[in-house]
Length: 114
Image 1 (cartoon, rainbow, N blue to C red):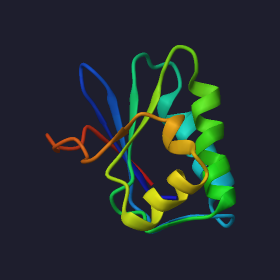
Image 2 (cartoon, rainbow, N blue to C red):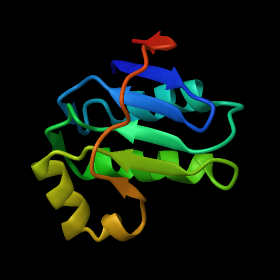
Image 3 (cartoon, rainbow, N blue to C red):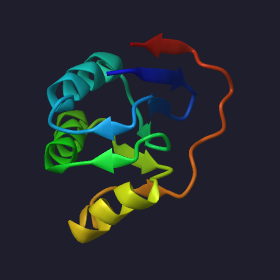
C-alpha cells in the first residue's frame, strides 16, 4: 500500500497512491494509516484522487480508520473519483465523513511512506 503524507499546521494530508482500496489491501491500508497517524492531533485529510475503486472491504477499512482516530483526530475525505463517490453516496457514508471536492494543493511532501 503506497501512501504519502504531508504534515501541515492545520492537518495531516495522506495521499493514497493506489487505484484500489479493496479486500487485497484493506488490512495493509489500516495498518499503514495507524502508523502514519499515531500520536497526531487535528484532522487527517485522506486524498482519494487516484483511487478509482473501493469495495466493501475497502470501505470498511476507511471506516475503521475513522474509528481508531476518533475522538482526537477527525478523518476527512477529499477528491473522490466518480466511482468512489458513488459508493459513498449509495452506502450513505457521505453523511458520515466530511468530504471535500478537491484535494489540498501540494506544498511538497514532508514524508513518504510505501
